Image (tube, rainbow, N blue to C red; front, side, top):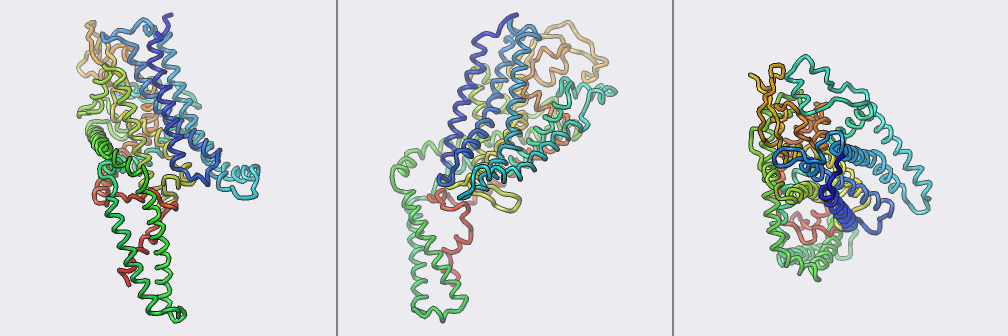
Length: 559
């Protein structure tokens, strides 16, 4: 049995280790940058960093999986010596990736249902004089509810009637279509339960992508391009507001003097508002001075050209992704077999620039790896930026605002929850943006074709002895006499099984994909109509700086 070459192993695992280390550093920096230090607890901080790191490691498996299957064949379409036997090294590589995906997805599932809720209630029970044991007991009372929820979801997944191979035996067309996306139907109740739970988490993540990823994809680059307001303009505005406020304050003093008892209830309310406005102005002036002095502002000015350039590049990337998702959505509506098949496509007819770019770049390894990691991290950063700009909402209630050095641990726990569910759903988005690349990588086959009057009708198909060298695609795989000539990535295999065997989930994913396009356009309109960011916008001293506080600065216009 041929062993896997060390160069192939290094190409698979060395980038994964590097990206894993980078992910850990980024997660540590993100949490330490945003958390409110006086409220931080070591256990909660470690939990958040661990959850975010596991999320990014799950995504880092995708490019190494693609690289692994791409390295199994030569450019002539023949299997290499170490991968020629499907029951030896090739099977070991496939099994390794499959079990790693299941392991990482299982850890994400445990974090979302068990670890994060427990740490949230554990922190909420913290108070002076409360012991750790008492906090744990109090948190367990609420935590049991999430355990029950996880058990219910697992039981539904284990016993829900899944799509089976026998359902398609009487219809050859749909049977071939199903096998094209599912491969083997072999599974057990444990796999079904895990698949259903992962699909459920992906559903939550898809909804989060509509709320945060769509607006974040456009807000992040445009804010980088526009930058902050001019320091001189903002200083003049603060000075002008302070003068107007002092003028109205003097009018009140001249009207009533020290005889405050003679004030009407309306004027007394105005006086209280003026005092609150004065405190707000002083606080803003203090934050403005802190934000505009020192080396921070000088570094910001030096980095301004880079900020504009990176914003332009990211905006072009966002437009390219928007175009790919839009073309894919139109293609699936027009050419798929309908909602009963989750609008899955077995052949793309409309252009997909991102997929073409990734396929082309794979001939210059590791360029494709870098591009795919950059694409994945762009989605992650866009989601985090959307959370930062919009805050964390529960229906119509704004719960937490994400601010540097001002975010409470509960807000970061919710951020980790959103990101971990989004990571699960991101698999569906990535396969939508680059379906061929994420399924086969850069593979060629050299095998016989089926030929019939209707290729989709396998009962009339016959195998030709003519060998042709072609690139592996989804539609060509169904025409091969031996479908094993094109090796699928375990990532795409799992994603398609989740989507197809639970078609209603796939239908909701598709609706969320269209919803993300809508929120992208709405976010574009809002960002373009909004003023530039304030220099003190990210230095608020509360979780939510309400609009009522803002109105205190404009009271003079209503006096």
